[in-house]
Image 1 (tube, one colour):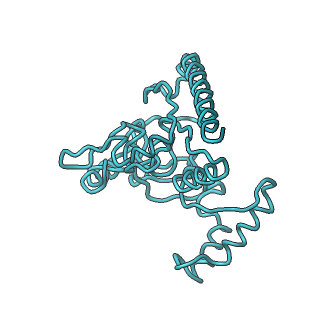
Image 2 (tube, helix red, strand yellow):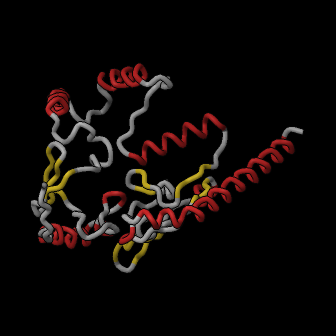
Image 3 (cartoon, one colour):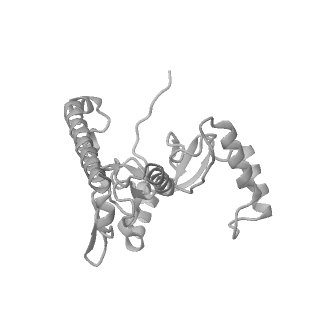
Length: 249
């Protein structure tokens, strides 16, 4: 039987870096990388990683169940991946244009994914979401999108799309120094808001996120919100039909 030892981890280096970051980085850290809204056991800064394990700047070891938010599905420093990266780096890195391997990767994806006619590449969730919105709007001819109220895509929230990257989605505001506070709406043109329907849901307290019973208690409220959104969609479709009728009698 495995013995579990509970002990408080050292946080000296992490705490010092958080303090230094607060003086030169908005909010101390921004977007999905911020650990400000997580329980105190979560580190903000990491030192190294290997396989399925990561180590923070204080030397504490963890199992990386996040897989670096998704892409590290083979683990950190996988030998084959490292060899491929080293080979490409030897030829060139961050060049003015793409290499042949981009075409090769696109061909592989189109061949492997049955419904894919072509492939586009993005460096983060924000770029990928932006591309998806662009493609969807071009294909449907519609501008309005349904956005999650606190959904995260890269360094910004899906709701804010073009917002100033910050603690938005955790606290709803970001102190950027000298008494200046940027809210979730700072820097967002009105035209962006006009093209979004925001889907909200009851907030789950940070300390209660592990208690599934809370989620179940919120199901009635969630169902009610879904029904409201469905009704709103029906109303918008009716208005759209009415507008089309006026334009093309």
